[in-house]
Image (cartoon, rainbow, N blue to C red):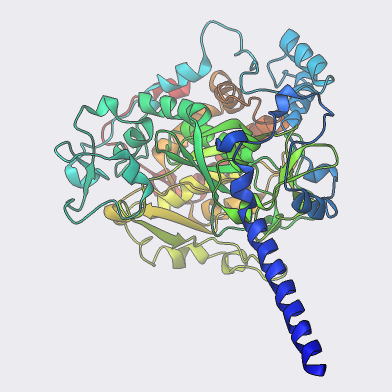
Length: 560
């Protein structure tokens, strides 16, 4: 009798174990079942949010998963960001001096529409360009300082030598091993037809050379910016590494871009008690950095554009990343939210929520794959300590630059001047988070610094972080071309804030910057020019300003 009871107990334990395994298997299969509609057809099993009233029942969703996560959801304002903050920025900027969102009737209409809490679609109207006969931005790019020619390009100065005899398979761009042994090193496989038929991301890649990421008037760049906001998204995955959530998006034409979702509204400043290393990464800072870099004529930031993304159709339904998929949930406000996995701000308390499933973000075009064009990562000599109490050496040693200038690669070539360009760029944005930088390995030390990862810029408009300018103050070196352009941008007819405002209005999610941020750039530009002037007074013009022009440039126009 005792043995019979023991056997029954064992059978019961085995059945419980089998039931538990079956349940786990079913939960793992839910992502695939969720994507299949009626009769086994692929697609979302829920009706599109636009077709339902604002407070309609939530779309079909794995019930247990939703209920479990909703218990931990926090609906604090900082975690419920959406595209609606764009309208708030339009109302705030439109009411201030200068009408940051375009002013006049357009701003009034945007403010009235904002009160209705409507969903902003991808085709929403943008603020009109500034009135006037001559566009300041076009006039700037026609200035002699923006038309100086590069040195003649040899094969060794091109990142890729195009070999039209090798067939290009676009699908292979998704595979790291696509460059097989038959492809000669240094040659980019292209198509059997002319370069004009290549996708714009490929045109961007093959246009990179020793001196620039893209040329001043390359039509492929504007076309690539359009692709970033219009190409169909076919797959999404979380980017590994980094402190905050970033997504890798692949498009129908096999191009890829890095997506940074919106975390703060335009008018929000970084709290004064935040350390620079725990600050939010702002999507609009990435967009503004690209436009600022182009206005400064550096052309070292990959193309970036803003986009309204449907979190259901363009992220959740196309991702194969289970870790990402499992973080989606429906908030108490009936909005679609997710938080992903990362070191900071990836939790239900800092979830990214749409209205109901639209979210803003920046899309930065990918650089060529590392298997095709290796990049070298360098530690920034003026890197901060990233510690709450410790200071870096440059913060306590006023002669630190002399030590740097004796260390390769800063002891020769143009690298120290590249650091000064990057310093000016970061100071104008207020970016304190420049711990490393990258260069293309093929070009050795005689090439430019790529200005990547600018998301912590434009955090404070009411404060100018003077410590960012320490490299310039300590080294007292700057390119002549950079110095003359900065002087030009300080003049009323080429005012930096007006040029930035005009350039940013071209973006699909404009306005990009709150008006006080634009005004802060003018103020910081004057501080940079004062720092260079002090260096010239101390060390002499020829010892501070490095002539980098190949031929004499008519600078008389800068004296106007």
